Length: 248
Image (cartoon, rainbow, N blue to C red; front, side, top):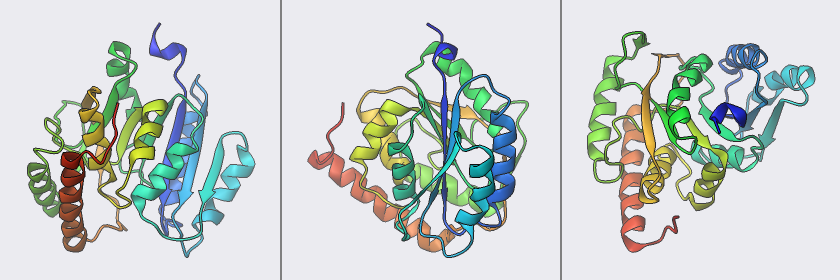
């Protein structure tokens, strides 16, 4: 059976104070998904925003009540926690993790389809470090340096993966929920934790080139969050070595 026979999509967007960047992203995603032959939903997870993030989603919820909804738990707990809550509420066959800034165009999900045709159970992740002739990218120079340095640090935790932090990842929902239930990292390192656990479980993870453009307004503090990421990776490695994760 081809994956197209059962493909449906839960688009999960974590949002913390994204009232400015979220509307064009939502408009683009809704316009694209509403033209697709498969079932879809958009889940915006509000991570304790103090701005009008929830309000800017309302027109889309009213226009597409069967497709657009929000998850709100009232306080800021981190991007990883928001992603986990979105996954646990997903109802479709696949979860696409997607950043509120829309740095990767939603259409690039179609770049993942060849891998799914070969193995519908594969986890496919977008990569800014995999080359392709038809890819366009604008990435600030300092992000390239920090990203490459961080990925070298991860060698023993996510072997074979060269870009763990691109915010564009497609997972079978059953596997995504399994990972969300094991998740202990609530911040930006959740990607590393998910990928480490997937590899440890023997699941296939494929990197795929995607388009990327930097969008102003990132919540990532390059120095502070890089240090936090370093500490998170150490925690993940220690938990794994001690057998604190249950995988399979």
